[in-house]
Length: 271
Image 1: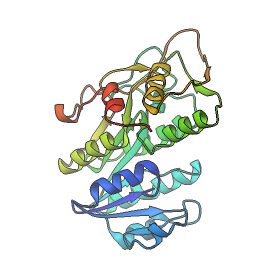
Image 2: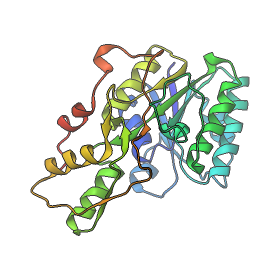
Image 3: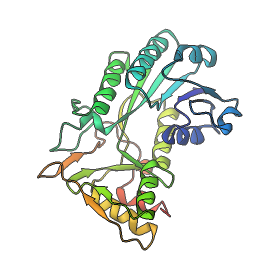
Image 4: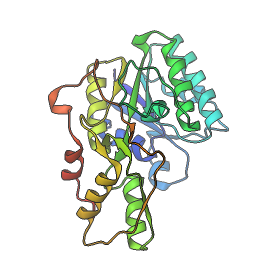
């Protein structure tokens, strides 16, 4: 597997994947927003999810592997993935789909594992389920579903939002009843690199091996940022603890690619 196309390579996760793989594979990416560093990179192709047909880019690049980290209009995402599925069924190509813990957000009493039935109350979660179901109807060797929990990292949107709230002394929402697992851009990209090298297929849960409360995790991050006195707005969506966590059971990765919530905090300096 030598030629990889990352859809959404200008976004936070997509670009992190591109930077991890670019030195090892013939790696291409798509971008939407006009930014000079993408326009000047011959490996990047502009792609408008709502206006362009993804098949034109696929026919031009002829990738061995597509990694979809697309964001944007939900219906346009569905159509794009329908076209991708048609393409990979006709060609020697495979699709890795970046999914989300939100495919389980209707289940609140337990963490979720790879073979659990998906069920979501959110529009976002139902979108991910719809695309997952497309992939589950094709040969397993042609696809991998990568379910990801909340992603942190020094330049992640979540950390930027926290910094902005602290600097402006604005209330910061935390969910005291939410039990979750987490990941970071660097942990996630190393895991994806491993899956590619081993030509893995199927469903993978790519998050920390342990769980944490959302409020506790955010408070620990804030401590690492400096001497702040945050205004926390505690949001209770239920009277009891609720889970939004994707844990591995059947498709566990090697020990050196496993990590816990504290590792995510310890290996990042959130300043």
